[in-house]
Image (cartoon, rainbow, N blue to C red; front, side):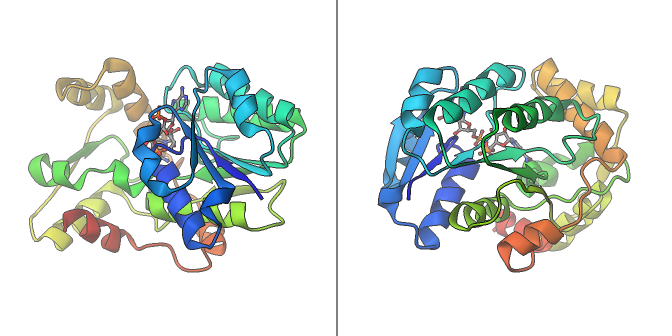
Length: 278
Ligand SMILES: NC(=O)c1ccc[n+]([C@@H]2O[C@H](COP(=O)([O-])OP(=O)(O)OC[C@H]3O[C@@H](n4cnc5c(N)ncnc54)[C@H](OP(=O)(O)O)[C@@H]3O)[C@@H](O)[C@H]2O)c1
């Protein structure tokens, strides 16, 4: 068996590989792809330096793969051509199964960040390749506890509930799909314990012993705050749009799919925040 993981050099990819190894998949059966491959030199797996911009290199790296975990790229706005390369390469290499990390409710959300994910889901459907969609929810780690303690929490998510989970939980779920059987054709909506931003502030306050408040802003004002803090305008706009969508429930999904793949309850929000503090 050969499992290829794209985006292996990122935070999620490393956790997936660690989880595959913990499940007993031999290191010799795992290939990790990315550009900054020195980051994963310690994992003991085969690594290949491959860019999503290079379809031929992707095809070569996928050749012989039984399963590919296709972790979505991080270059927002460039992902449709890049992901097209990945899907075409997987098809050319004849991979047995491709598992893609998508976004919550990608087929029925107006969240701008989801558009490239929906396009990718459609590419996979059109490819005819056996595939699995993992619609990963928000990472709890997206919320910096250190920044919340220093400055408070700011956003535009209103009272929208956000079913965030730890990266490690999403990674373990991906590893169980890769190491298991019978997932082809499935679309999993993956999320954890839902919370509002005000509830997140309460949890951080309780776990740190330091009061933290959440300030809800209009999306326009939130963009101003993010740009003022040094974020590029396009990135600030994407974050504010995601919060706008979250205020209407775009990031709330049941936790059943994630817990079924994990075979255990999701990591509680309080435990994740405690781990980030200590
Ligand atoms: N659910 C969420 O809350 C959330 C939050 C942020 C991002 N995401 C999405 O989930 C993905 C994984 O999350 P993460 O935390 O692991 O992100 P990350 O740490 O930023 O890792 C991104 C990975 O994508 C690879 N990559 C990006 N552009 C590439 C390219 N042109 N060619 C080859 N590889 C490329 C990077 O490789 P190199 O670094 O080696 O170039 C890296 O391995 C992200 O890429 C993004 O699509 C989800």
